[in-house]
Amino acid sequence: MTHHVTPLLGRHRAVMPDWLSLYYRQPIELTHGEGRYVYDADGNRYLDFFGGILTTMTAHALPEVAKAVSEQAGRLIHSSTLYLNRPMVELAERVATLSGIPQARVFFTTSGTEANDTALLLATTYRRSNQILAMRNSYHGRSFSAVSITGNSTWSPTSLSPLQTLYVHGGVRSRGPYAQLSDAQFIEACVADLEDLLGQTRGQVAALIAEPVQGVGGFTSPPDGLYAAFREVLDRHGILWITDEVQTGWGRTGEHFWGWQAHGQNGPPDILTFAKGIGNGMSIGGVVARAEVMNCLDAHSISTFGGSPITMAAGLANLNYLLEHHLQDNARRVGGLLLERLRAVTAGVPCVREVRGRGLMAAVELVKPGTDEAAPETAAAVLEAAREGGLLLGKGGGHNTAVLRIAPPLTLSVTEAEEGARILEKALRNAQ
Image 1 (cartoon, rainbow, N blue to C red):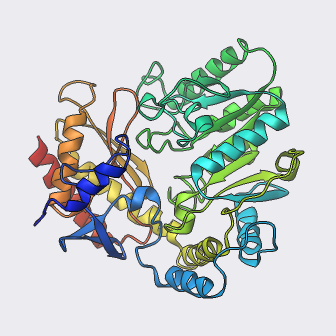
Image 2: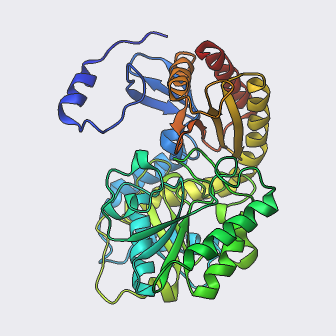
Image 3: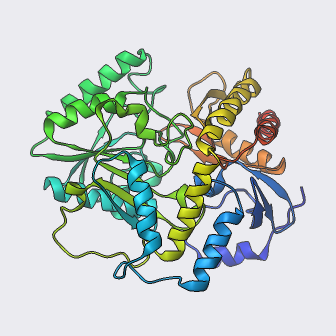
């Protein structure tokens, strides 16, 4: 592929923070996209298997979303939550119903970070406690409160925190002290760990926050039912359950519309947070909570940009498209095929430790051959080789792990899944 060093890179480095990461030795500028493909400034075409970090959920340049944004922009872009806002109420009604939470109230934000920040505010106020249970290997955003419940040192720049965070086992199935146990024994051990942890605390713990499938941590997840088992312990103590669905929501996992539904035996969570995919690239986040929890704040609050008419119009159009075109079913069907293909093309590749995932949320974990030691250099080399072959991937991983993250738009076709697997196979072999 032709690729030129662009003057934009120098300008970027002159004005952006040093810690603002760019992919690739020679970073690329994406100029436009269509469907599952994007194009860079040199005219190269790429199959997009990362979707702007799981955010371009349906497709690039989806006409229905573009039309909704354009029409709303022509009428009114902004008003704030101080005025009645029809698109916001309409989207809130849809989300409340879909959430599975009874007497649900919805508050819109501009990002997943801000949604989780709001969930923490609600839980700590409702329970009058600043103690939070979080999962090891977790990621919940980049704000001051969110980094303090992030169990992933790569993404947590400070240990200072407004919260007392206690980390629980269970988010990673195939590593750590319980990896060798059966699924039932794994759940039992994690529940025992939770009980033991609660025995160390003073006062009321406010909430457990958990991603049903850990995103930045490398698409790791516990056996189905773990959070339902946790729920029995939490309920005894009055502790709230917050499910972070920023990456797992809207049917991406295929089997379920929300990630929490794999753990739903003891009912829905108290609080659900969402963002990313619902706007197909427009900045929407939000919190759903039962009315008693949502209404516990006794001070005024507004959102200047959360729930803006233009983002809500995009969210409504995108959600309608997702439901009308049965994209959850497509994620299950094409995602299942993609996982099969990935397992086939990585079989016998010594640096591949594990292929895992659900629906269109797949991961390939890379190690130094013959060991369990992470191979970040290999991950970087595969990322480069895949780009050269016309495929964009993501990276992730937690403590001593290096993972390729694969999360295409939910409209992915069988042909495109097979094309992506072929390019990845070649990239893995080139990077050995």
